[in-house]
Length: 82
Image (spheres, helix red, strand yellow):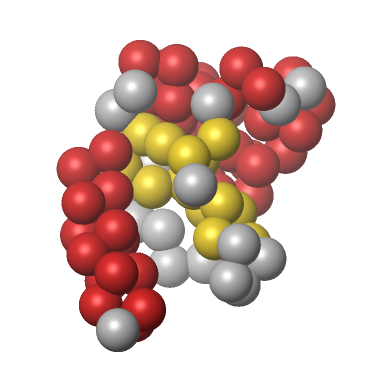
């Protein structure tokens, strides 16, 4: 299920984004980018629809994903149902 970013409080949204951008293994290329700059970019992507908040009811978890990855995720979930 996709959760619109606007449905979250500002604190909840920022907490989710900060966890996402500081997660181990996240690679932003050769140049260092500040956490605040990454938070700002991800928030912008969420508000423009380039990134989405996905709630996985089966796992009870919420993740930020690229909108382009949604179809792949939905296909994988549909395959698991059969």
